[in-house]
Image 1 (tube, helix red, strand yellow):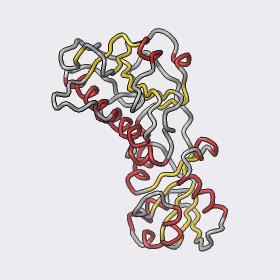
Image 2: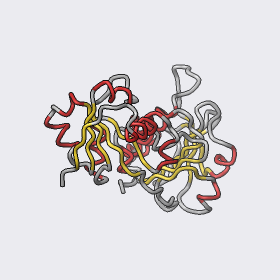
Image 3: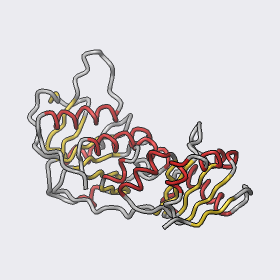
Image 4: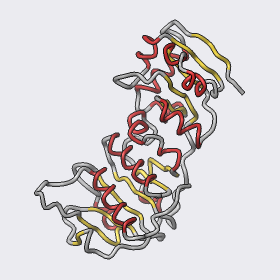
Length: 264
């Protein structure tokens, strides 16, 4: 059913103020229970896997596009606004012209019997989003974020994730106690590890742990790991970007034919 269409022109409209906060404040999603999805790709990924948006915000120029207006009309309410107002909402250098406000999904319950990626205090939203995208691409079913990791539903993480959020079971704000004992073996990454990734025997299924960009995995996380590995870097760089390291590790497991998992 097509949603109600309204035109907005005042920057003081309450709906615009709420949307601006969601688009620009990384903590707003957690506080409001809503998520800002900007751009055709993210909105399309949501429609394919998650359901109906509460609101669609559309720039007037985008409303003239048949494809974008059709996507917007799937929302319960469609708000059409001048391009200049949409640009004030947008968190992108080049505004996309279309955005959804959707309910923030409830966190999933971690399942230690299934493969997962564990994020330990990763600070950079781009890294977090890229790792989510890699996990989804390689079939990892769940991602766990320990406290101190960038919010999984913040606008920058969503942009970097490119829609991968809707194919993963996500849990954030976790402590190690929340994950409990038992389950699949944990594999950590460390520059000090003696085992080189290409040569080491890996478990067929695992929890892969990736740590803070500067400090790496916390000692308490390392102590839970049955295995720690390093990625050889013959070029002499000090370390790989953590998102690149995650891609290398997950691909190596997949290359060996291990069952990393399947999307939820």
